[in-house]
Length: 170
Image (cartoon, rainbow, N blue to C red; front, side, top):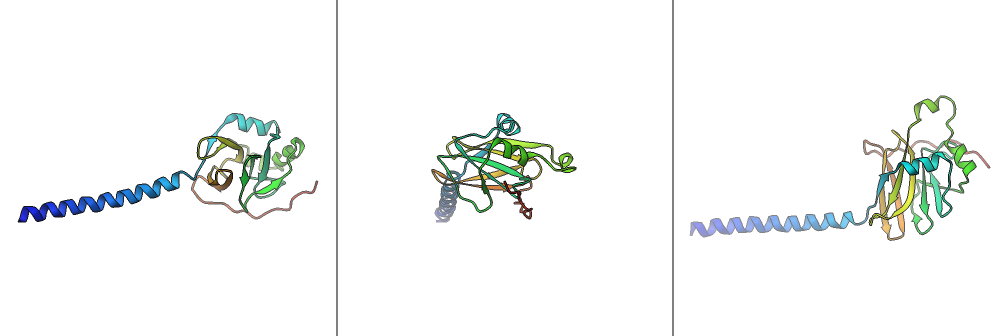
């Protein structure tokens, strides 16, 4: 009788563990399908540094239009859903002005990142350009197949919200 109780306890413990593992894996698989990612691409960095604007992309910036910390271009087939990003009608001339640093700030923030923005299936849906050490990476959240939210984060995982400075008028 004692052996039967031992096997019953062992079987019950394994069943409980299997149920928890199944619930955990189901939750994990539900989360993984809704996120895209950023992939560093030196061609994207060069694109911005040549002040090239992709004609089939809508552009957005963070912080200030006179000195944005990050600029993204989202392909016209997709919609950006975010209160953090501000739309901008970008031209090569305006992009050049936005990327010029005033005075001594040039020495502090010379290094920048360029990345492709990929959806959950690995398709390129946009481009990312940001100052290193301000926004080192971001979260690409796919709300649905054609709607994306880009959440900016630092390498420490914290979201930075800096006060807006006055924007210039065109």
